[in-house]
Image 1 (cartoon, rainbow, N blue to C red):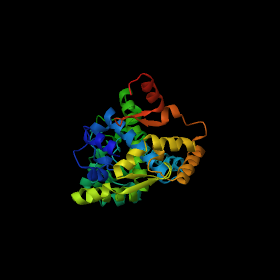
Image 2: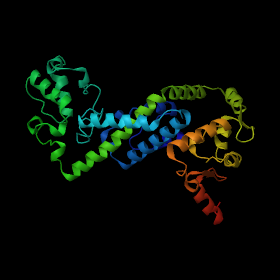
Image 3: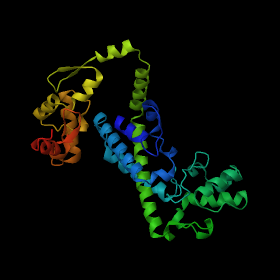
Image 4: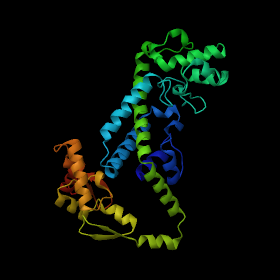
Length: 326
């Protein structure tokens, strides 16, 4: 997660905040301006974040069926996207480049008629209509009826007369606009999956935040005592590692790699933090069931660390060794 933090604070879309604040902020994707969301930098960051959360979720909750979870997420997403109800993407990426604010968003699932929407008042209805590219004029009743249409009719199927001047439904978009909508949809789906995993991992994330904040408040004496904390790894033959940093680093070192090879298990990120032989075997069985016996490629997936702490896959590491570069 520290790598993702560095990626975030050094990006154009991120903020210069501490690690504890990042753990609070990273799920709030709707706070990031739309102008940054379609950039290559943001897409790569979102991809890395989703990959990390998927890996962590599979390690910590191996009994959960992630494929089933994501199938449900994708089905709901398609329905909400068609209706312009994905938070922050109501205009499907073709608005003014600003994310829809909480004040603008109206969840139509809570309203059964246009008359109920009238109670929101003219200004609230105007903001919601504008965010969807619809006309904002008329009486309060007319605005409510126009907005309520979007509950049952996808934006691209609405009559053109309902849209503001210069705004075209998806079916009438140019090729560039269609490509932009496609790119927006891809990013939006990643954000939805990230938020779903964050919901599952909420307790773990909160514990991590509390631990980070505790460390930030440690005195010198307390930090010294923490460095003397012992961590044992059964996979390494019950070898002891002193201090959290040494413990985290050992997963990429020769002793742990050797132990994993003896168990016939690939030393990938899925097994970080796992020191029990029983837990490692159980997780490996779950991964094999989910992906099939022939999916693991050790030359690309098994990781090695050189003396300077650089991480390589097995193929790259072997090639560099052969050339005498490491």
